[in-house]
Length: 268
Ligand code: SF4
Ligand code: SF4
Ligand code: SF4
Image 1: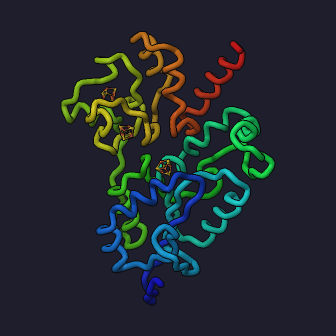
Image 2 (image 1 turned 90 degrees about the vertical axis):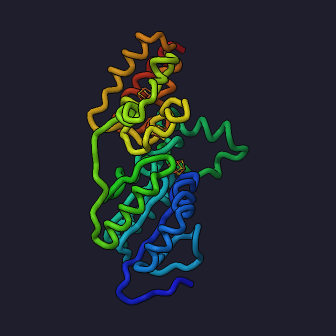
Image 3 (image 1 turned 60 degrees about the vertical axis):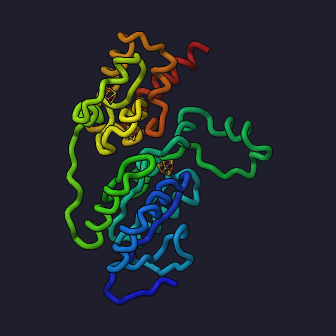
């Protein structure tokens, strides 16, 4: 049972539709988490403790997207019980891979995947938390960047400064590290030019193209990158797939993906 100390701010961690990866990443940073819990009470975090202290909470961390009617109700309760609400990771920020169904008929998928689809209670769409309630901060990544998250948690619990924001792309970090450009060298799609920096160009450092897990940065221009990919001779199928990642339902990529889906529909 978590010991409740009068006056300590309460932290709660909630799961919605997700793979649990962001919560596990947070748990992997146990040293920072334990330090933090010297001055705060862990009121709710089923992955870490069976105790459940009632709200109100100073801060709720939310993982996952909204994809059932129950979740749509639950997130309203979480918001009402929390002074601040911070989302963890790409599912919560953009709907996740499960949002790929938003571009099709979800019923078709359940009928193919499940032997008894009538028992599957799912909304037609998987949507970001910000479509349902006010979000105070969206911590990016898949999984979430825990260094940033711990800083954000300390800011909302103890009034410390929030992490600095920038509008740099992953490409800038690539250049700072002196990496050669995989996209130009290998003629493959890389989402780095559109993607918010913050991971230190992790994937290009291991000779992998960026899949865009931090999500689009402000003023990203998918059409311009797409034109460039065509000039590099990248096939149309690969170009379409690049936008159908974990941020496919973000506002920046959504229309683009819908347009491409419509083209595929017309050609069938
Ligand atoms: S953002 Fe990635 S790691 Fe986090 S819950 Fe979603 S799929 Fe899992
Ligand atoms: S490898 Fe990707 S992230 Fe790095 S510079 Fe090239 S396009 Fe940008
Ligand atoms: S390089 Fe791209 S896909 Fe890889 S961790 Fe960074 S943002 Fe995510």
